[in-house]
Image: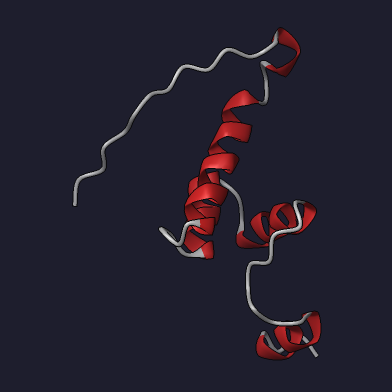
Length: 80
């Protein structure tokens, strides 16, 4: 499968200059995840983050990545 890249131009205030690309990448990855287009793991990859960091970003935004309670997730991941 070939990968097609699209370049998008966004106007942003100069004080955001260093973070715009990362923020847009993250927003796009979150959008794809929320629409069910990609898995949480793939969304993390697209955002350029580790799965742990991507899950932390989702949590900051009040987005549930998995339909588990914190206890169920810890148990599922063997963190108990």
